[in-house]
Length: 167
Image 1 (cartoon, rainbow, N blue to C red):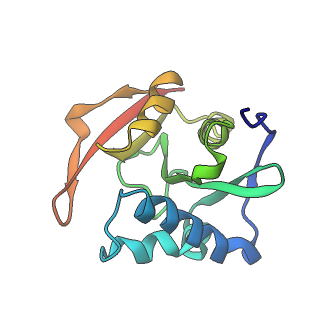
Image 2 (image 1 turned 90 degrees about the horizontal axis):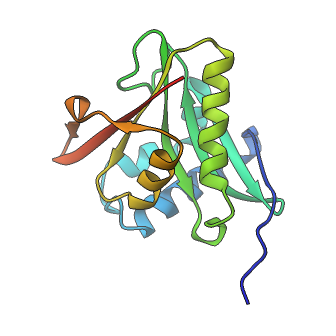
């Protein structure tokens, strides 16, 4: 018997949730085998308060429980890595294993797209790791296309790929 699909709610993270959001993000990236536990990037993943101060930190709830998070980066955000002045991007999309299959990842991406469209921006960009196949499937299903000319390597030798969606 499969679990019934539950309603997903997306909203801004509250300050009292920043610790839990940081833990959630680390759990997804480290325990999911995406980042080594020894990587210096783990401290960035854990610092949800900094993301909330320098981007819009969104969370998804499934069945009333925290299930995922993403940092929406409008123009000028310190977390934006490749977006131009009329573009937005999102970073550190993370959905807990227990919440997968309920649409939390799609809902978080959609919330970022809605924010960018409401701001009159023309494109959404993102960077992702090659091994994030589940995320790639979401992006491609939502109409994102690969931009290999923007791919880059983060220290220490982490190959990253990029996508774009015209809004």
